[in-house]
Length: 223
Image: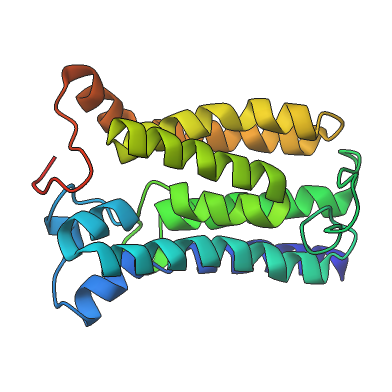
């Protein structure tokens, strides 16, 4: 029974991640194909740049929420897991790597992020995983999630580059995890995997940043 619940949680996480709010909002409300406009990326940044501030923020909220919801459902099924839902009032929210619950939560989080990047419902073409990762972080490691959000926000506002904020926040994730959850090997491995995934998905942005061709906030046009 416990293995069925674990598999179900992981599948639910992937399916939730596969819901592309950028695609749905662009096609249903604006009758536009976001994959053919702007950077072609199906995430909040491109939605904001192409569709405007309101739709962009709506996509951002939806992507964050689906990551958070995936962890909420998993933590309900695995009440022993160290998440914001089961240990919000407990100062020590870590448990050993050997805990089956902890490992399942990590796989659910990864499934949600992978689902966003490679959505089942939209030909496996999705976003870069930043917003859904934030939702997952806020569910699993709320302190780390909030700090990463402010790192992203500060870098984005000061530099004008959304991608740079995302890259730096992703790079900081393993270090913050090591500081707050040094006794949880599962979290450390998870942070390294997510950091690599997010940075890898931004490889084209890194090339444009180095060449000075990356678009700043508010600038339209195909990258």
